[in-house]
Image (cartoon, rainbow over all chains, first blue to last red; front, side, top):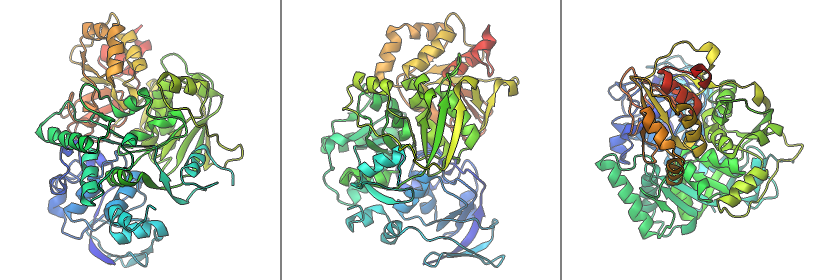
Length: 161
Length: 420
């Protein structure tokens, strides 16, 4: 799968409280959650992005709460992939479980850069700078979940047995 | 291969003689937990996939604690959804207003977790039960849905950091100071994907409430779990709370650790984590005059009876400073009752504090004490991220109950020693 989009860059330790503040967690409706995605760190986030754009960040992206509402809000807002130096562990598993592509790699990316990501071959190309960065593929077990489109879909295929 | 304590519990739950760091396993759960925010998303997933029955109705706990008593119509709808699910699936461990408490204080208190268990919860602070010698970790709602259907969870076997404790904590130093010092040392991602395994002669100097508080905040260092060895105190606690017989796992003497950190408890001082990360710990020799407007004593981190006693011993005969609002939230109904019978409420109310029914409430900026722009709060909670307790321009300072109470009296960041 090839993902293409424009990057929007954030720093280290982007926590789930800024991805989707708890005051909006009185609903589980993905569209309602997406309306407030990144609101407390970047109030103009939704007006800056287009469908398919890619969030790029530093280390420990998604730290804090277990709220699956965070990757759900990002995915529903139209973001195609999150690239970060590292991910907090619950965000990492939530993204895989709901079918939001994420990539842990240390690539130099700035807001506005055009990125193309080859998930199958593990190559991120920054088309603006021309730099290619390789990233490791997921363990085989997780690839099954990713290919199925999420944990519930993979479970009906017997992944947890 | 020698194993850590965590690895041994994981091996025992996936039918393998041994596991090693990096292995992907599918493990059986002894308990699956969700709350009023995460369970509705899990129920959506559970129903979408047509799962039908739950794997074991006695091994699921649903605790309505975050926005309860329901703060608004949407919150009420979410709780209603979970209530109806619990009724439909005949899940006995559904806890609503009048029975509920903050989940990670409630489950140990009710003896629902024992040593050697594997617990997952759709709440990041599920790592609390490591204090009881269990493997417990926070997961997401889809994990919860899958586990409610199958009793299974996928896990990557973590490597561990060994935290070797020695000495005894001094006066007004508690579990909160221990964990905030540790997070300051290793950083908010210092234990990413790893276990924090506590060990050493200093363990015996920590009460069960201290250990619950320490494991509770393992996630604030990025940890998958925090875990304490099972000793006499643990066994007594489990018995007293009617938990199942403990299954004791101990790390192999030659277990491999990613890192070993030594901590001398006797050298620790009261510490405050400044905005906006739990790693921003400062001791009082580094803290100047920081005026505050609110104090919260409560949460899954420090809303236990020992915390209320610590706060009350400082508030007794004193007043909350003018311009400060102090909110005390016992974490469970049992703690609430104990505090009432011990006369702690009289002390708080006479001091000018408000006492609330159990709720997570202000900890995550839900209700019961939201901050306006520019306001500062000293809280015994676990996170001080931007906007955590209200306006993105407000500030949360994390500290122990003793520091929170002293700060309430003086109207600025303070230790109990500064009251004399």
